[in-house]
Amino acid sequence: MDAVLQALADPSRRTVLELLRRGPATAGDLADALPIARPGVSRHLRVLREAGLVEVRREAQRRIYSLQPEALVEVDEWLGAYRVLWQNRLGALHTEIARGKKARR
Image (cartoon, rainbow, N blue to C red; front, side, top):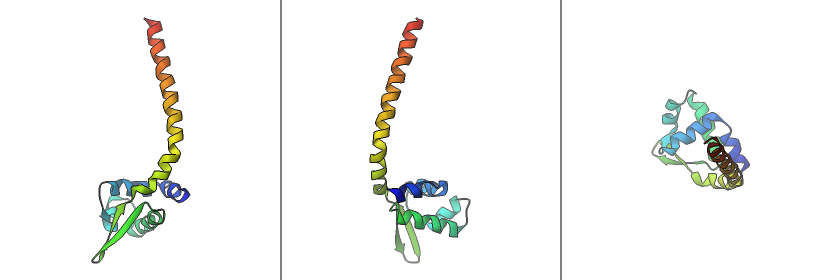
């Protein structure tokens, strides 16, 4: 999970994941959508590959990158406990707001 979180820490890598969420793309396609040079995109793709967030397949001379959302499952499970905490707090806030509205009537 640490490798995934470290990979997600960089805004350019998060942008790459957002682009790949729409569908597979080449490094060139990704570089065209980012304000960084192709070598930088290749380095980001390597980090994402090593973290298991993207996979690459060859098609003739091209390398096609695809999102691997399964790598996010462990992070999602870890965040689940925090999600419950916030849902409970937001539920309590909603109750207090509703009480305040009733009191003003």
